[in-house]
Figure 1 (spheres, rainbow, N blue to C red):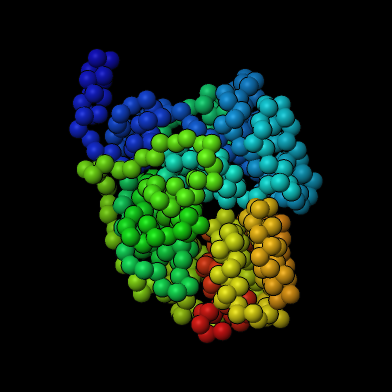
Figure 2: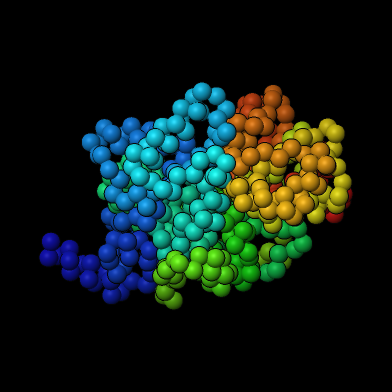
Length: 433
């Protein structure tokens, strides 16, 4: 034990730390941690959804636990199969609802007051810079956009976190992604994410933290950053992180009651890899089936017939995304051979769509506006694709059969391409409309 204490003290004096290391060290009660070290760390927030909570509740009971360590540090969100698509989905939500009541969880979001979890949590002030956040959903890495360490876990781990408020973590090495150049017209966070994933591959950042930095990132909106960090898991990453800066401070100024301690990497922090991108001439990106890493410039797939466009989700469900898509549509109507499904990410975004006039425009253009739900993204509810149908989605995954029939094809893109495609009835560039 004396030897280990000595090693820890020595470690804490010699290692420069990345943002990921600093957050894990802080929550483990340490000054520093080493890559690949196992640490036991306290969590700040635990996220569960209607599809993951019921299994966690079952495990929680089998563990013999009867109370959550801190009800204020759990948030439960109805967002995947909502409004309930069948009796099984209704039972999932019922289980979560009753558990929230039993445990005194105030951060329970019911249908009508809810939204897609990865947009809802930041917008509700439930995550902060420097936090350690876990969630039983793989895209929990989204909150790294605020300078948090956030990562997906399994339902069993969520039950353990509920019981004791701590979890084991293996400290990930960090890949530094430096991005330079001004993004061209129409190009945004989704295009940047697809381009980087296309370069790294689906396992290129396996169990690593992806730290996004450089002038392009500093000039990227919070909406764009949330999209970028959300997609980090598609390269296999444990989390994606952006260092807190003025954009972060402006976003957090909506929550003056919250206090937080932002973490930035040490100047001598060690990275396992570094990648540099110049995006000054980056074309709009489209990921071909069946992987997000199959990213190509839009002109390589232009002309591909599309039966259904889905605009929204946790990656591109902000008002700015809908505005960009509307700009790309140039006041025109949806092609009669194509369906356009618009999914606002939260109740508040839905209201913004209405107040901005965009809801009226999309409806008159021939689109249908759905409730805040993950449904089309997971192919479980609303907008499921039929045999051999083709979709273009602003969601984050296009795996075989994920969005409907196993023979269906889904291309991933940002809102500008989605808007243009809805008008053209085939994959299109906004400038070609």
